[in-house]
Length: 360
Image (cartoon, rainbow, N blue to C red; front, top):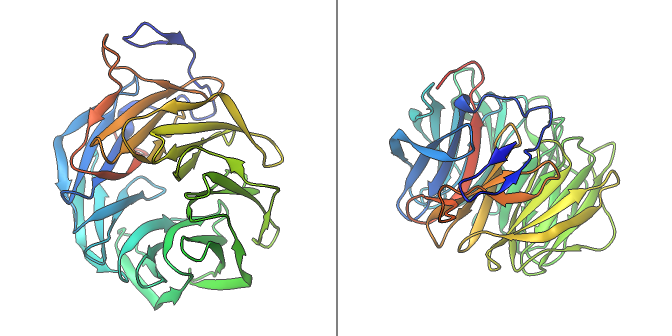
């Protein structure tokens, strides 16, 4: 059971990861307006506490942070610097620079790491290409050969399926998902067909843990496209798009694979859905919960009990508990009902890390 300071009582999500130690969990938010990364520890009640070093430096205009599957390293896409910053995650949770930034293309905006932890990819928004890297035993990125491959017009997101065999790139201006095979050496190879259609202005993609279904939010379409992932990785559309809120921009699937959450950028809300066994998205009751001003990113910590939303215009992070039915409940911090913690200027993306084998 849990009880927040506003007096609400409910029951937490209880899944296979629900007993993970919160002492080993951390949350990071990249602040694109001041070139920093905010760093927090996760308490046993899901609230965030700034680390001893509350921020660390990033590159120019950081917009995305990806954490390695091991929880030992983090990588930040610096859109204005055309490079990727590289960090080791210390036992304390602090990000420590482990190497100089590695070059990317023009305006990298998103990163995906293969589940094996051996390969990483960054999509470059202005040069319409994907940078591809090998990850060394020390966590340092090195460019593959070739270092980049072409994709569609204005790529904005990249996702890798749980098997690590397929990659998908969301292209905002061409309204398509480009699909790739991942070779044994990590290089991307176009599938046949090379792309599938989406709705208007796709912005983000999420794949549920079984690897059978994928979901794409369409910002100006105000909806979500659904796809079945075939035996060879190809996407097949599933029915009509499902309604979201105003200008959906981010989507995340719960670790259990039972629920999905969508940040509605201009609706100042989070849409919440139950996932059925056949790829359907079923709106919960209520269908949305309030975030703050201009939510743009969502992260769920490893136990599946808590979610965090970065609000780029109000410069803070909303805190939510996840109940046993998957619903989001404002995780209030005091009797006045506050459920946000301050970040710095324009927090663009938020990620959670679980440090295996470390103690905070």
